[in-house]
Every structure is written in C-alpha cells, then in structure tokens.
Amino acid sequence: MRLDQVLSNAGVRGGLTPALGATEVRGLAYDSRRVEAGYVFAAFPGARTDGRQYAGQALERGAVAILSEQQAPQGFAGAWLQVEQGRAALAMACRNFYGPPETQLAFTGVTGTNGKTTFTYVMEGLLRACGRRVGILGTIGNVLVGEFEPTANTTPESVDLYNLFERLKARQGTDVVMEVSSHALALGRVHGLAFHTAVFTNLSQDHLDFHPDMEHYFGSKTKLFGPNGAAAPKFAITNFDDAYGRRIQPSAPTELITYGLQEGAAVRATDISLGFDGVTYTLTWRGKSVRVHSPLVGEINVYNTLAACAAGIAHGFSLDMIAAGIATCEAVPGRFERVDEGQPFLVVVDYAHTPDALRNAIGVARSLKPKRVITVFGCGGDRDRSKRPLMGSAAAELSDYVVLTSDNPRSEDPLHILTDAMVGLQRHDTPYAVEVDRTKAVLKAMRQARTGDLVLIAGKGHETYQILKDETIHFDDREVARTVLREVGFGKGR
Image (cartoon, rainbow, N blue to C red; front, side, top):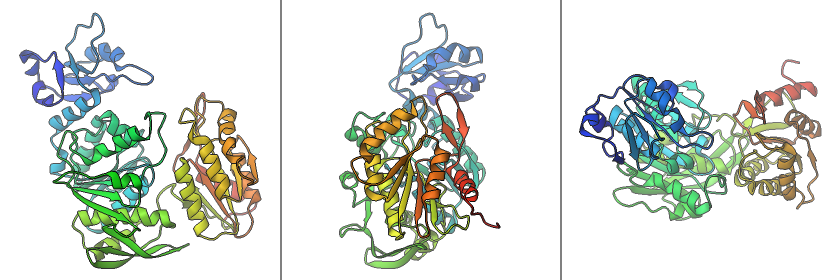
C-alpha cells in the first residue's frame, strides 16, 4: 500500500511529498527493534524514553519514514512526517493498512474504574454460549478463542491491537470484547476503532497520577461513546445507578440502553438474592422478564452481569439466551477468586486496588455473612498517593481485622507507602497489624482466622509478580495463600 494511502486522515502536518507518498509500505512499528525494510516507524514521546532517539536505528533497519508529533532531531537525514497526535496517527495508519476490522469482527468495548475485567469474561461466556468465537483483550491478558497469552497493557498499542485482530480473524473469530482504559482513550490507542457496543461500568478515584482531576478522567472515558476517528458505537450501555453513568448521553445514531437496580433503568434487576452460590435476580427489559443466575457472588456482580445482559440485548439475543449465557461464567481470575485447602474459613483473592473497589470487595465478603472479615491489602508505589489513606480508611471501616502490607512498591520505599495508608487506618478503632513482607502478612492473616471467618487478600488479584525497586519477582497471591494454608496445617489430601 502507498504511504499516502496508509496516512490518509492521520493528521499529517507536513513532509509528505508526492514522491514520498508513492512509496510502498510493508508494515508499521513503534518499537525500532521490530522495524523491517519498508516499515513506517512511529516515534512516541514517553515517560522514560523519547522514541525520537531510536529514529536513526529505525532508518538503518529500512524504515521509509518516521511518524512523530514532534520535530525531527537536528541533523536527521531521513523522511520525517510530523502529525497532530502520534498515537492517533498510528492507529489511523493501522486502520488504513490492515483494513477496517469491524467489517469482520463485532467490537464490544468496556470502560470504567471497576468491573471491566469481570464484564469481559461474563460477556465472553454469553457470546460463546450463543455460538460466537470470541477474543478477550484486557488486564489479565488476551484470550483468543480460548487460547491465553499475557499482555503488558490493559489496552495495547494500536499496532499490537491490529495484529491481534488479524490473528483472531485467522481463527474464524467473530467478536472482540475488550477493556478500554482511560489511558488508551486519552492517548489515542483506539482511535479509528468502530465499536458495535460501548459499555460504561462506573467511575471512582483512580489514575490521578495520569489524569489531572476526575473530570479529565471522566472526559477520557466518554471518548468511547462518540465518533473517535470512526463511526460512533451503535449502542451505548451505561450504569443508570452511577452519577457519571447518567451523564453519558450519546448522540444519534447511537442507541442508549441503561442498566441498574434503580427504577428508571431500561434493563433492570429486581428480586435479588445474594448467596455463597452466586447471585440470582429477575432481569426485566421492555415488559419482558427472565430469572438470571450467576455463580459470581455479591451485589457488585449483579451490576457486572447486568451490564453483560444489556450488551447481549444490544447484540440481538433473546432474554432466555442471555440468561443461559450468563450462567456459564463460573469464575474470573483474581476477582474474588476462592482458595480452598480444606480450611474452616473462606479465603479469597481480589484485584481491588482502589478505595471504591476495596469497599466493594469487602462488601461482597460481608454479604456472605462470615463471623469476621480479615483484610490484607497494600497500595502500589509510583501511583496516586491521595488514594492510600482512603484505602486504609475503607479497609478499617469495613473489616474486623486488617493486615497492611506491600503491593507493588516499585521505586518507592515500602515503609513510606504504608505510612500513607496508615493515616486512613488510624481514623478507626479496628485492630490492625503492619507487615512489609507480603508473604508474612498473609501468614499473619491466616493465623488470625478462625472457623467461619473470611480472609480477603486484596490488591494484586491475577498478577503473578511483584515489582520492587531493583527487580520484578514472581509473586502470586493465590499460590502464596495455598502455601501458607498448608504451612499452618491445612491442605487437601493431608
């Protein structure tokens, strides 16, 4: 494909001469190590490195042009094309080079602070039960028609996204269900993607190390619901019970479908039953109703599954088909995931790493009516410090005993992180312990637990690593919980 065709509507400001525009393009890359002869290299400014410093290397490897929102370095001799926004330009170039992916795949995108991952797994189960072949893209990793692979970002860069789409199409895939992060929307990674259905779960404080304030954070989320380099979504699914969700009012031709528990929601759950075996409720839509059961526990999963029900309606499935599909998703990795070694108390691992998510997770624990809730949690380093005391306060207010520990401290001193969280903990009279070592912290919690209690290990969920100052080590809360339970005398088969 010609370079001028690849860069059509990509916001090129200058440098694209007729002769250069006629150059054949063989591929796109934002990593100079992946550049081959005939490639266009996108040089992004980054938090740690500036892609422009690798432009020379890309040129040596055969790049025909460099794409950047910044000016060329002094003395650079290759073709330099300046664009309005680097990532959005690359995303549009991908759309032009690979072709509009929505011609072969139906895209369901979900954004919000909490519930995105659970929604994708529930929606995948629903679509699969209805005969579709699905790819999941999100925080835990990518699952292409049942085959898992790890990922570095919740929403990958556009080149990686389009490569995933190509592989999914090669496997006769029909649908993509993807988490769309606020970072991806703000930076332009999904610019030019046309979504069939866009879903909003909720909004609470998170990522204020990236976004200046909550309004900026919300503004990034709303980009999913309008034309963003491609047609606006056919359907917008929003949480009627969330104040931010009610503010999303997409323009025609997008059809709005609201969901919630409150009267006024278009897709509504009533007659809700919460138990250890999951959630059951009556789903109502336009005068019709069906009884829905999900093995996922807690009121938060009424919302998560209800969002999937609304998305199923957008995809044209009957209520009976939707109810059958919702029942197929039995667990989501690291989302209130149970660890059972025959102990007389419940142990669960959850990804909750924001104040609101931690409150929700402890709320789910409370709904199971244990004798006590013992919460293990920490806060990430090099991230929004303002949420640390809020998390400490949430844990202390709702738990019977708290063990404060490390999460992913990154470059920060773990003790400084714990001190920030303790400010919130000490606003309450809840007994607590502080243990920097996360394994020892889990051990403290298990030794504290008695018959009928519930131990919640929050913050890392599905993660299999811990990021320290000088290294990243293998660390899986689920594995640690099993090991510790055996160490204190439990264990299946003992």
